[in-house]
Image: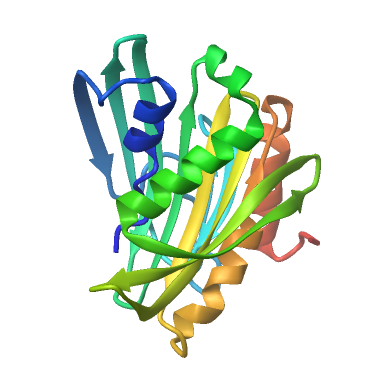
Length: 214
């Protein structure tokens, strides 16, 4: 199951285009922002371009693509980790300024619809979430297979910060060790302002040294 699927469908829907006119994609194993792993093996990711930090159970693959639409180029970025019994993704896209006139509610609904359709998932819940100064939406979902839900389920959080849309999603097989990782992954995600980059790096340095307090 591929969770990293919101970008093209969402952009096409919001921009009233059938799809990108052209695309260029690159990928790397660790990607920008990968730091030394914690003692339990979890990998801290500090994305300066993405202005966020997150923890993953292993090193993710960073992928960036530039898609050309009728209104111009749009860059899409993702950090994705696919394991045998689980998957973890952080994806973000900068929307054109005029898209914000649709309002947060419509943007969130379009993102949810695209996410479910492209990854072939069934919705089991949709609720508001409080992420400090930013609100957002949380989607609960399950995988669909031949009209019947499979054992794997997960959650995705949608957060709009200015014109940047973040999607943070994870899924795991119930009863697996990874099922307990979903909450930690989702709760570790933080969005940081430009002025806080140095503070974020210092925080992770202190965590590696065991001197930081949450």
